[in-house]
Amino acid sequence: MTEHGSVKMAEEEQNASAEKLKEKANNYFKDKDYENAIKYYTEALELNPSNAVYYSNRSLAYLRTECYGYALVDATKALELDKNYIKGYYRRATSNMALGKFKAALKDYETVVRVRPNDKDAKMKYQECNKIVKQKAFERAIASDELKRSVVDSLDIENMTIEDDYAGPKLEDGKVTLKFMKDLMAWFKDQKKLHRKCAYQILVQVKEVLSKLPSLVEITLKETEKITICGDTHGQYYDLLNIFDLNGLPSVTNPYLFNGDFVDRGSFSVEVILTLFGFKLLYPEHFHLLRGNHETDNMNQMYGFEGEVKAKYTAQMFQLFSEVFQWLPLAQSINNKVLVMHGGLFSEDGVTLDDIRKIDRNRQPPDSGPMCDLLWSDPQPQDGRSVSKRGVSCQFGPDVTERFLDQNKLQYIVRSHEVKAEGYEVTHSGKCITVFSAPNYCDQMGNKGAYIHLRGSDLKPEFHQFNAVPHPNVKPMAYANSLMQMGMM
Image 1: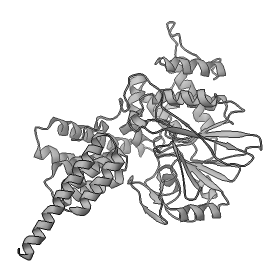
Image 2: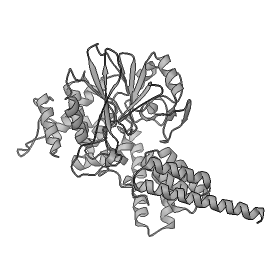
Image 3: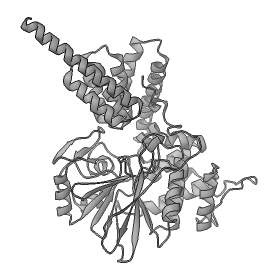
């Protein structure tokens, strides 16, 4: 047999092995085990790195695990290998949409529509994306009129009437009380809607409270006191109620800190956020809320909150939510020893607590810098920093955490932002803790939820896990932008 023949044979064997790995990955993907799917697509690519389909398939698995940065890289690679590979354009467009890069997405949807003029799904996605690009341009044009009035100025809440047939909870003399909160939770549990007048009252009042807070909130727990820290809740209202069942209602003696991402994905985001805002008004000093990357316009437009508010109330109310979200603090320190933020640490060394205090947070987050990092970054096991799997901010290693804690005389950080199978994860030698409180995230991840107790006496984290509870038959992402309804070929 010639040398050429044996090389060719070895190559064919390798390609056949790669195909088997791809099939294995496809089966994991069908079972929604995306981590294993990614693993076997990666092994297939090691054997046959010039196969566009493998990259495209892995790109979709990355999309499902919200690693939009990696998904974008893979889709681009697939197109470098085969510029006629239509699924590659689809994947790249979806990755860009997820990152709020609408113009780049539009270009790829254009390509798909040109090649497949009769593809209804592609046409719909192109039109939807085009609409968003135009809307963004329009918003930019008005925003340059700097003196943007607050929605609050155009509301006449006093003269909103509550109809006689409304039997739900009402604020007492315009104030949130414990009775109101209990009635509200029961009302929401029955899938009923709070009267818009009451919703507006809560939003206007909570904006006032939040706008007086610093970007870095600092609290002190006495020896005998404890606080409960919860991670992402993502519109999973019935799981939020379960946290209060398991751990007690918020009160002066049972304080809570909710670490961002209250809305989007889960289809009961309005109920979650109005309940949390209600407790903020009831116990302003003992109930704490921090901003997540989903308390932003771009995310709300894609992942359901904007659609949900418009379906249950009005576009004007969404504008007010957007204003309120801009005032959510970005980080919280406990006894000057523990720092809590939604995402994580910074793209460069040397950031101090003072720098966090100075952040002007009343805006949509920029694409880079400390405010962006606090909302978006993720830890990684290896030292140093690397490009973010999400396509925004960075990933930071144990050495980065160590240096930051040393410089700021802190013991450890607590962050959320990532689904964890056990509901929490301790990394970086105990110095970086992740907590995530949306169990069986999106009705499909099968993860536990968790919350943390911290006591003033030793600040040692105590983890409490819980499982998902049933919810009414409204699917996650029910209000999401049609582009994110994952019909992605």
